Image (cartoon, rainbow, N blue to C red; front, side, top):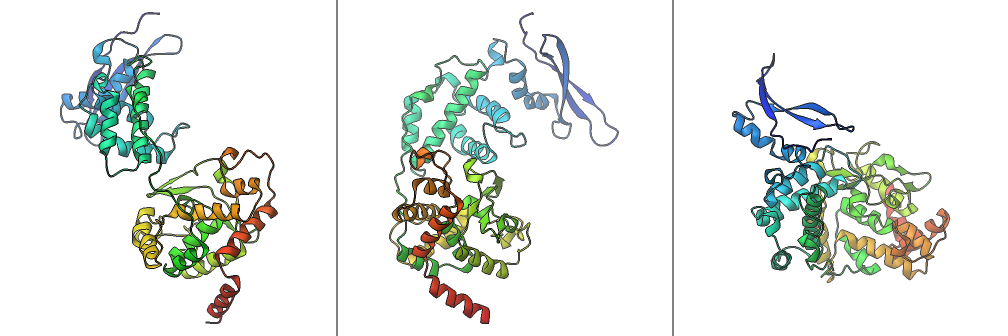
Length: 398
C-alpha cells in the first residue's frame, strides 16, 4: 500500500433549487482494505461563507483529520488553539454520544477551554508550553478551588494526549504530566447537627424545604434531586427511581451505575413530597418534581440560583456558622447513618457508592428492609415525627 499523501482537497459551489448555493468539499479517504474512495461534505451556504477563502478556513480542522497519517508540518496543528479546536470537534461534540465522556463532562470541558485555557495558552506553539509555566499559572488563579484547578490541568493533559494519539506528538511529550496541582479541598464540608438542620428548615420557603428534606433523608446529590419527575416515585413501594441528573439546565445520566439504583424513601419523606405535589402547579407524572416557574415548568431551577438566593441566606438567618451547600445534606445523611451504627454495606448502598472501598471493603448485600430501617432512623434524628403528625393533621383540617 502506498504511503498516504497530503491532501488539500477541493471545493465546488453547487446551486440548489431552493435557497442559496452551497459549498461542497471533496477529498479521498483510504478504506479498510487500502482502496481510495472519494468523499464529500456540504460545508455551508454562500451566505455563511461568502468567499472560497472563508470556506477553506471552515475545513481547517477537517483537513487535520484527513491528513493525520502524513508527516508534513502543515498537517499538524501548530498552535495550542488549533489543537484545542480539533480536540473539541472530535471529543466534545455534544451531538455524538460517547462512552468516554458524558454530556455534562463535555460541556464542562468546553467551558473551561473557551473561558480559561485557550485565552491563556491558545497562541502558544504546542511544544512551547512548559510544565513550570502552567503550574505557576494555576497557582495564580484566585477565583477557583483546588478541585477546579485540578480539572483545568486534566483538560490540558487530555488535549495533549489527543495530539499523541494522532501522532502529532511523541510519547512523553505531554508537559502537563509534570504539573503539580493538588485537588485537595480547602473548605471541608461539615455535616449539620440535628438542631442546625431543623433551624435551617424553618428559614426556607416550602419548595426549598422539601428539597432539603429529600436530600437529607435519601442522600441524593442535588443534581439527582432536581432530576426527579413525579413518575419516578412509587408511592406504594416507598421508593424512587433515580435515572437522571440535571446540572445547569443540562439533563444527563447519573454519576455512576450504582447511582441509578432505586432509592427507598421514608413515609415522612413521602408525605412531604405529597404535600408539595398538592401545592405545585406542575404535578403531572411527566413534570419535574421541582419545576422552575420561570420557564413554565419545562426545567428545574439551576443549583447556583437556589444556593445563592435561598439556602445560604437561610443558613445565615439560622445562625449556622459552618458553610452550608447542597452537598452538606449528603454529608449529614452519611454521618448519621454511621453514627447510628448501621451495617457498612447498608451505608454503602444507601449512599450508592460505585466502589465499596469508598465506604469499607465489605462484600455482603444489604436487604431493602434493612436499608429502609436505617433510613428511618436518620429521619427520627432529623425530625420530630409527633410534631409533624400534628402539623399534617392541622393542614388537612384547614
